[in-house]
Length: 369
Ligand SMILES: [Zn+2]
Image (cartoon, rainbow, N blue to C red):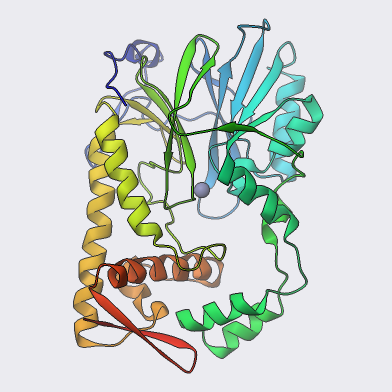
């Protein structure tokens, strides 16, 4: 991956006159300005930013509109699509009746399979007869999970939750729940997709976007990097303030996603110019990508070290490590994410020879080596 030419992006941003704010070594060229849900904020004459609502802590997702008018005047592509839920669908409909009424959707790029990103992709693709561009693994995950609906969770999933330290009451509660919540926030996807792959360069309008994949958050998360203009659509791979969830997934319970995540950080650090404007899926556009990547890696290593130190004095189940890893209360709504992330950290230590695991009565107990 070659380094870029000097970015020419600042001017269009500073034109708007928002004061940059500094936060932990990052610069936010637009400060805390953001578009309303379903409103389009022009980052430049060929790149728009909109937001859609997401319930819970995240509150929103950022989506991007890319001029794609080489073959079709007024054409535009979308990068990420929002949850398939009435507020998002209503906002899209209002946009198509309003600001986008004279324009034509050409294609849909999706960074990864998570519902806030792929949610409306099928609905939009079917409505406008346009293709979805995704990395193959992400596409297959989305197609698989939209079909995987059952009245109750499979037994192997419950066994793994018990192994992670869920108590009997929590297992029983889980057993009574539906399986396949993914499909509730994701519209029906078309049969096929257009494959994007790591290193591909995709021409959209007058820009070339290089696909760079990362692992750990999802298997093959795509970032779209415009090296020439120094801007990247980062999805959830590089977020400015919150850390992306790095979890063991039921589709690959023996994986070591934190190792993939840390390797991806090194990959992006080596390839990205430091002054790139990062367009994240959550939060505000920022500069300081190298500092952010270093901080993300450092945060994980600090937690791994603290976890290893704790394991020297006590045996732990994954769920016993929440206090140490997260420093905030874990309520039911995020218990599963927290458990997945805890197992990911313990797995990393285990594979690095820094922890060992013993199974007793179906529960995994970790200790230092
Ligand atoms: Zn995600």
